[in-house]
Image (cartoon, rainbow, N blue to C red; front, side):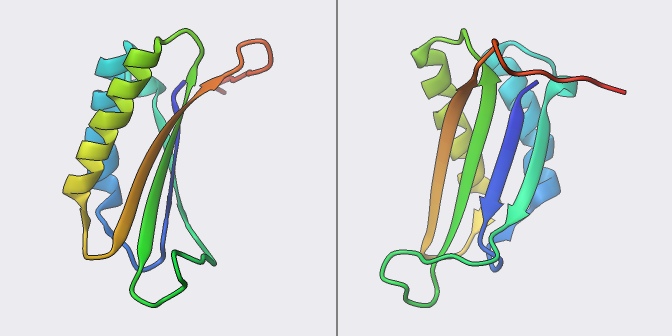
Length: 114
């Protein structure tokens, strides 16, 4: 279940595979799910405008979509933990990092494995 999306600037130095390998067990531990349930998609931003538009800026935005029912404290703990992990895997200067945990609506969310 956790649907994880990592949007990042094209020039951002991010070890994606290593980040995801450590991210999935972290998410599983914090929200009490399994590593196998975690899915991460990395997407390079084709175009972006950061701050004043000056050169040399980049960004990484992580959005974690989880089923409803986790307390605000648990979601905040997850955000902080993922941000800490992200800081270890992104290198460079003038990089904006952000993490957002969003609840999926159980009334409309559906998933299947084939």
